[in-house]
Image: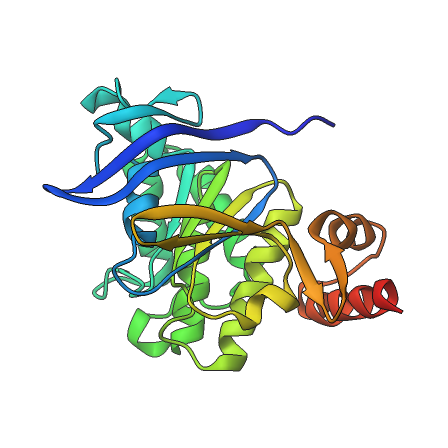
Length: 266
């Protein structure tokens, strides 16, 4: 099946206020891809993500996202663009005075959902999807950092987005919890949702293959679309094809990926 073009940037310059952050950006992203954005703090990773959901306007170049012309986007069209995008923040941004269910209910009502039965069903569905089906009545402070981040991913899934943007989602988590979160995002991607993740953790690249872009010296450069294991290259496409053929639970995806890579490099 032909992949759908979701994002296309041609000769795009991106500014943060009056400061040029990224120049001459050339970018194409399709449905079902897993994308890494690498780079130091301040290199432009977050700025690029914000440009996609129109938090930062694009003034120069040709920029399209999810069927919208970002250069010509009207204020009343921005909410409709953002409904197609799920955003995962490093600092969670949950409403601390409301339960998990109330946090998710608030988002659905703010995006036009009215039927309480449908709202409750969707909340139960996304919580189950991220392994938090029993946490709906908890307050954010009663959850661990990893659990809160899972709730944030559930929130991002509420409107069945075509794309998830994750800005350093593991930055505040211990390594094992971080791995579980990236594994969860990787599984979400296998259902056809594109995931773009800004990170500085190179360890994820070997465990969860994807396309890799680097922000550096005001440039966005694609590093590779494959993962090098020793002298052998295992492409993302190979891993995805093999995964689709294996009935795997979320909890075991990382191990199966490692097995696939080992088989392909023998």
